[in-house]
Image (tube, helix red, strand yellow):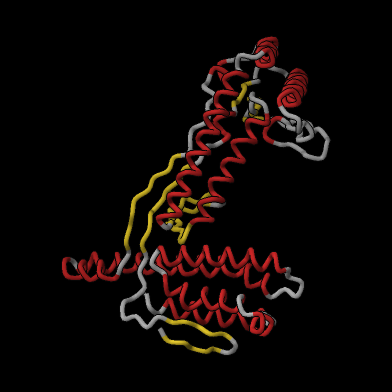
Length: 340
């Protein structure tokens, strides 16, 4: 190891002949959707006036059910997925497809639908927290299909978190099953029958799928490319391109993880408590980078930041200019990318 000085920053740089590699666990995760808790009622046999009457009756009933099943009844719902959290009730909207009138809504309490949405956020927030790299396979509008690379310890922690979420889904499915036997649900069926509408859509299984997690260990070391170059140079070319992209994405992921901490450390009003928490987070990120094979990120970027935090004399000098500091960090990451 050699001590280098760049501006006001000291960097420990490992002088290794071997190029940067990446190792860890490749993960794919699929989350449940609240769409399984929604149905569409065909109201084409109703005239416009009766249709609007039925829509309002349906909304009132579902709001009453929501209030009965949740203390947070202020999160008012409406048909067709529109709701307001400001205490008001929005008038339902109806879809007219050709000459057919349809109402799409969830016949289960809103608290169950919100639970699915919240669990989905937890699953994706957690995997982004543990991920060393994210590979976007498909992107269409707001939809993305991704693969993630986690460290071994990160994969273990994330797996336990997913299992905890799946236990919550099991409990949720039991609650939904109990609701389907309730008087409130019978009232809903009766309302639809009273207007002469088909209740078959309500015969579907209102059960939420569990989170599906798939994992496999991977290693993106340079020797793998060398072996393929001897076997098949054409295949090796494509493997090398993908390997470089994934490692670059991983290095960029760590750069993005550090950015908010540099901004906070440069704040003139930062407290000792916040500095201590940042130090803990940086050590966690450093351990993650080492575990996935990016020890150069730890040695040349993260460790120097921690060392400065531990040195009160240098702290103010280093973190007084966020722009200059960010430029130096970016330069260090650019240097690392050349070693892939």
